Image (cartoon, rainbow, N blue to C red; front, side, top):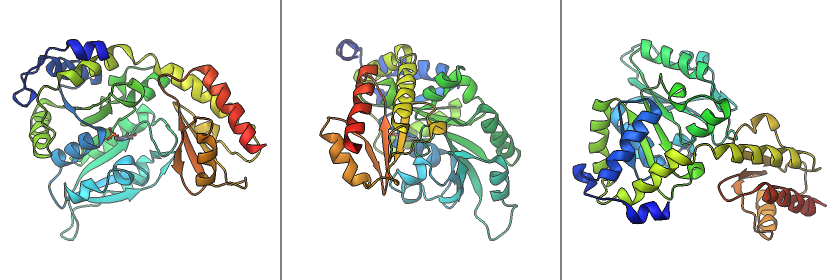
Amino acid sequence: MREAMKNAEVGDDVFQEDPTVNQLEELAAKKAGKEAALFVPSGTMGNLIAVLTHCQRGDEVILEIDSHLYYYEVGSISAVAGVIPRLITGDKGIPDPQGIKMALRDENIHYPKTTLICLENTHNRAGGTITPPEVIEEICRLAHQRNIQVHLDGARIFNAAIALNIEPALLVKNVDSVMFCLSKGLSAPVGSILAGPKEFIQRARKNRKMLGGGMRQAGILAAAGIIALEQMMERLKEDHKNARILGEGLAHISGIKVDLETVQTNMVYLDLQESSMDTYQFLPKLAKYNILGSPRPPTKVRLVTHYGISEEDIYATVRAIKEIFS
Ligand SMILES: *Cc1c(COP(=O)(O)O)cnc(C)c1O
C-alpha cells in the first residue's frame, strides 16, 4: 500500500479530476453492484452523508438500539442532519422484520415522516454478527412498499460476505445505499465508501463538500483503497479463523464467558461477570502482555483479530489470559 501511495497519479478530487480516486470509486461501485460510489474520509462521515442525502430535517429514521450509527457517532444524525431516531431492538444485532413493521406508523398529522431505515452488517456491538440476506431482503420489501429508503452501515460488509461465502453485491442488492470501510479488516490507512444510485451519489457528493470532506490530491489515499478492495478481501478468512480459535480457547477459562454463537467473523466478546474483575481491572493486566482490547463496561471486553496477527499470536493471547485468571 505504501508503494502504491507513493506512485499514485493524482489530481484535484473536488473537481473529480483525481484519476486514482475516480478509479477507486468505479471499482467500489462495481464491488457493491451499485451505479456509483463516493470516497469519504471515514465511515462515520459516510453514514452521516447517507442520512443527510436520504432525509429532510425532522424526518424519522428507524435504527437498531445498539447500532453504530446511534451509539458511536456522536449523535450526528440529530445534531447535523436534524432527524429523529426511532429505536427498535434486535436479536444479536439482527432486527426482526415484524418489529420494524410494527414501528412503521400510518400517516397522521401528529407524526414525523419516516424516510429511512438503517441496518448494520456485520453488527459491531453484537459481536460482529451477520444479518442474513433474506432478513435484509424482507426489511427492504417492507420499506419500499411505503416509499421508505434503506441504508446499510456495512462498515464490515466484506466480513459478512466472506463468512457467508457469497458476493458482497448479493448482500446489498436490495438496499438503497451502503457504506463500507476500506480501513479496519481491509487494512487501508484511511477511507470509506458510500455507494448507491448515480443521482443519490451526486447529491451525496455535495453533502460531503458541505461537511468539509471534499479532498484535493486524495489519490494518495485512494491508491491504498484500491489494494484494499482488490487484494485484502480473501485475507479476512484468516481473521475469522483466528477469532474462532481465540473464542474457543477463552471459553474454557473459568471466570470468562464467551457466547460462541456470536463469534461469526473477526470479533470475540468476553464477559467477566463471573470473575472478580471488571472491564477496567482486566484491560491494564492484558496490556502488560502487549494485547489491547476495547472496553465494553462494566464487565465486557471486545477483542478483534486483524492484519498482522498470526495464529501463534492467538495461542499466546489465550495463554496470557489464562495466566491472568490463574
Ligand atoms: C467503524 C464503524 C463505523 C465508522 O467508521 P469510522 O471510519 O471509524 O468512522 C461505522 N459503522 C460501524 C459498524 C463501524 O464498525
